[in-house]
Figure (cartoon, rainbow, N blue to C red):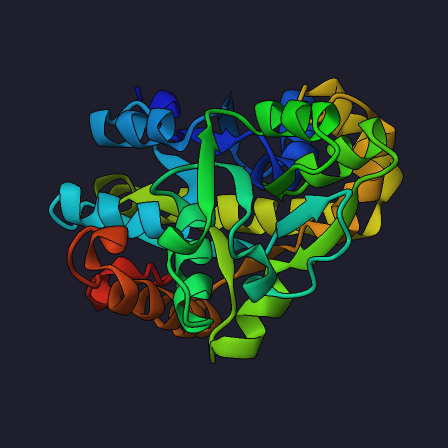
Length: 300
């Protein structure tokens, strides 16, 4: 039972968060990691959220606003241990007449994730540019691949996608261009860093096994380092683990995925400022209230 309790059950999303994990996944399967892990990868953040709430997952890499929602939903039962991904969102189109947010007025934008990070980031940027969702038509799709399919079929279509799906869509369609980098648009109007993903742990587990959580963070930091320095090795693992269809696409996308491991004071300062921006725009985005200081895990 003791061994089982120390096997961390880790969930992540198909995309940049798992791209930062693949080196650890590989080391773990070869018995070369500090800790003992079981990994699952989901296409939808709500799957991970449900498994954190049920206790089937100990650690999950989730959108930053969802972490705050989970904190409220579990009555402060989760903590965030790091920021794992910064800005990864781009507007892509074959139409290069789009140079800023205002140029989306009157257009149709295809995207995923109603009520998730891309949606809240878009809504915030529209508001900061004296616009609202009423100024354009937003068509929500359930998966990034569906957005990519629309972009391929319709030469005038405009899509909002995260990496690595941006790179994959551009590989399928040579006319597509990155017309807006939402991190740059965010930097123009906000004083905070744009955060995509954070890593959460169940508080009950963290209190019982702080050493296991610390070991995971050490392992994860090495995995992030590999994602940013060993592009060929990480890209090959991304294909092998089914995160990205082709290693060549993963290699091209990795430098634009902003994969990080920010902990401690850096985590708290950046995450709290980012959540404040979302809260000010729409309290529901963070679960109705801002999380307290006990939201931020610190190694004893």
